[in-house]
Length: 93
Image 1 (cartoon, rainbow, N blue to C red):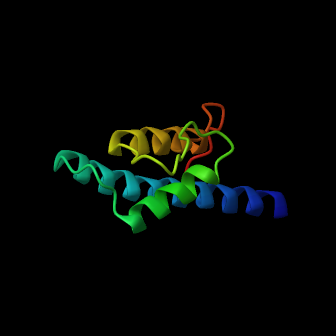
Image 2 (image 1 turned 60 degrees about the vertical axis):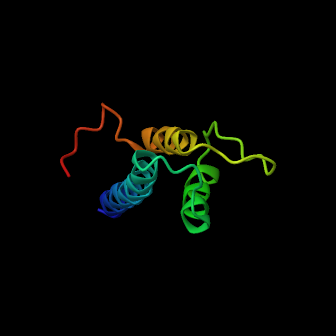
Image 3 (image 1 turned 90 degrees about the vertical axis):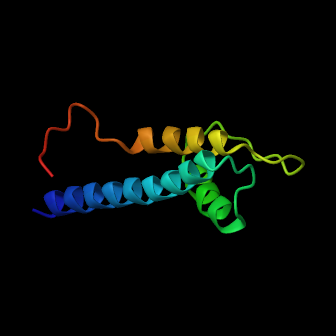
């Protein structure tokens, strides 16, 4: 029973993280559609938190140049992909 509870807690935490990443991606997409090239500091901080907390991320954060919105989005999609439920996990949510 404890193992099932822990599994359920982990699935909920994963889904919550995916939703939070979706929110950041949506905000970046709005910037992209508006042809904005500067990511607001708070949004960059939130995105960076997700990216750096992931074991697999390709976005390098060089301090000397602005990172394009599309690169932020690509990195977040990469992080989000690692959180998706594997195809072998057929437990219904």
